[in-house]
Image (cartoon, rainbow, N blue to C red; front, side, top):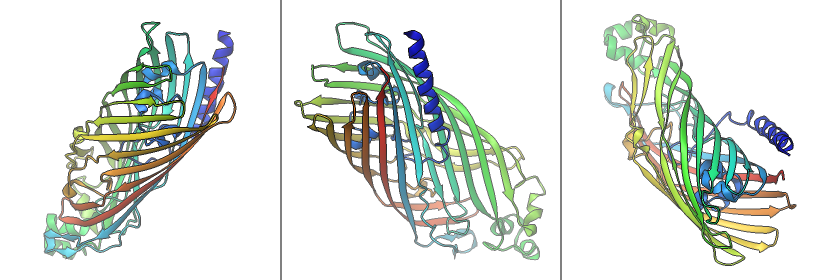
Length: 455
């Protein structure tokens, strides 16, 4: 029996790895750069009740304690398509260093990048006391991309953060006749990042060499753009602790979980494209290809919520989550060529997410869902909003449907639209280029998934 179970788990894990190996090429972000999209069923209720568990294996991520009520051995997969829009309207971007000369260039185009975000979870109920689980999923990520000639090119062209978490988990019911469970998970996270932007060598030459020398070299503001790109990756480790309690025969339950901070020191390379006229600026080693690094804290969070069954057809769900985004106080890139650090002041704030949802069992094998979420954005104001992450407060409206196709197979589909408040930007770089304008943001989310019982 143990051998048969092991073979089933290995086969399922191979399927999971095959699905995920092609899937993490691009990510998008919710508030900040966190990714809520872990469960197709959870999407349908706007992730209300996530810390109490949906029974689809996403408990491995949201609250491992809630795995205790998933019977047998189960594999779950969800595919999420994130379709963001980030239209920029220029409202007087200029350079203060050279008398307020307007910055040329277009409005983008739309910087939102469509992303495919999958998740795979395996759970196994060892006995009445122990349940184990394993997940492959993406807890953080972002992707924005603009033309090299757009008006905000000196602030951002491409920004991408991809994460993959390998998450083993365990749940324990310490008292056999009490429906109370505790759980823990280890989050082994691989993070990979790319940041790029154009470089205004004309204005840099004016500031560093003076007008006569810059003119003699043929350098003038906005007329001699170069390009810089930084890439890096790293592994980090964190943990999740949780507890859950089921308090009636219908399955009503509450849960609470804590996700720890994960520190990653992204290490890689910085590459520069320098126009010929600007090569004298590289004489001290600056703007030459070199090693580069940037430390990033993936923040801790605490969430608590519940699912309450009113009767055999209706259930209500609720969730609150607090995330400590104030750890992201700056984005500092260090270079190995002696070039001064590139520092972007962020000064993000801690935020809350509030979610409400409802499920209706329309038929024995068909469940309908709806949900609403208010998701606070940690960016404090226009002076700290950048085109790399142009988000703002979000209001979710979500719908979902679950179909029990067979005794062993459940299929889920969900859709959500995120109404994002307009995001004003007043972002200045080190040589006076100030991006001034407003981002008109929106996000559409589409999810499909399945749960399959392996016995």
